[in-house]
Image (tube, rainbow, N blue to C red; front, side, top):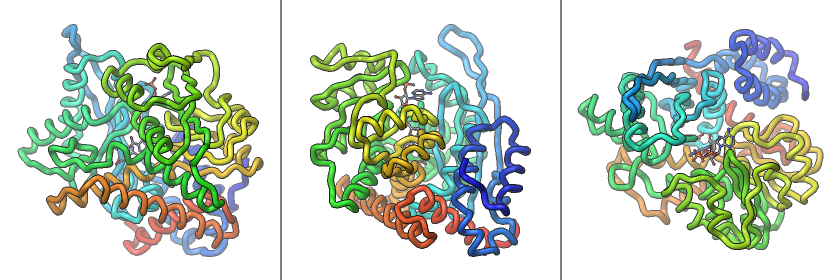
Length: 448
Ligand code: NDP
Ligand code: 2IT
């Protein structure tokens, strides 16, 4: 494990002690703290002011009961979460995840990452995250609606356009945001568009928000390729997952002349050497909400693999876009063997520390999620801007803004990595640059 600066050892020990058992939060915090060594070495006021310790403690953590009635008439109980981590740069901002694996440690890791990601966008948004251990798989539309209504019946009192602005994440897309917004509007008797992002286009949503995370992760990879005088033209790409981020990453790779040859879900992966048919993928995942094996069943030449790893598929570029810790050291070595040159994280923390180390040692360019997948939340902030001015922008203009934001995050990561003596290290660049923006605002506010 890379060393922590002496000043940061007690900070990390305190995180582990106070947040016992929250392994993903420890992992996310450690990665940021490891990057901050050169910062505290050079600027001791970040240590003297205890701003790093303060930043690692969420401003507020909310846990609540979500009771609802299933189609069989039985009462169900889930747990709801919202971690309002940091509001130094703006209202708490971050998605809601509905997945059985959700617990307070997962929400805290995601909220922590969100602070730095949102700071990197340069837009006025703080960091937060929420969700529930509710499992949407196999649930009817009516059950999803009743769950969302119950979830919002508690959440509404904690959120607001100037307070906390949730959006989607795993298991939460346009359908769920619709039910959540409807219930918020009903309870509060306010048409407060800016309280949620990822809304439908007819009722306050922004064009490009649906596409933005996947498109953004590919724009980030494109910047990396451009910096090396290269492009997506003719490249083989592997994208894990087949949800919102994976689908639109695939679409953008194809628009830029590359070929996505494999996508996956939690049941396995499909290989299609002629290039994933994005319209078929959308039909299976967005309309039918079916399993990825259906893709292979519907497409000649495609095969479904349920007993292997998608990282065994040889590719020039990989975009992990499913979930945390899905790409371990073993997977990294397989990708390296297959000739991978660039990894752009569409998901949050999909790559384990061992895998990141393997990529670094092999000279693979590695873009961490808090930089590479920031296009989603950045476009959410653009949605908030449109809501505030009661305006709606064209697809072309919004996509141009997104691409400009991804370019500026890329350039800022590289410039910061250079400044702190770690040229080409996007992890250090993203962590240091996000941290200093947030910490400087916190310092200006005094001890609050
Ligand atoms: P979706 O729910 O649309 O899709 C998730 C995909 O990942 C599905 O294919 C799902 O497969 C797979 N997946 C989820 N959990 C697991 C698991 N435990 N093991 C294996 N596969 C899994 O979510 P998104 O596409 O929105 O999110 C994907 C990632 O991107 C997440 O890490 C999220 O935090 C991150 N992200 C999302 C943003 C957004 O705007 N939506 C913004 C920035 C980051 P299955 O259906 O079989 O469960
Ligand atoms: O992880 C993320 O950045 C998201 N799920 C998007 C958050 C948002 O507020 O748009």
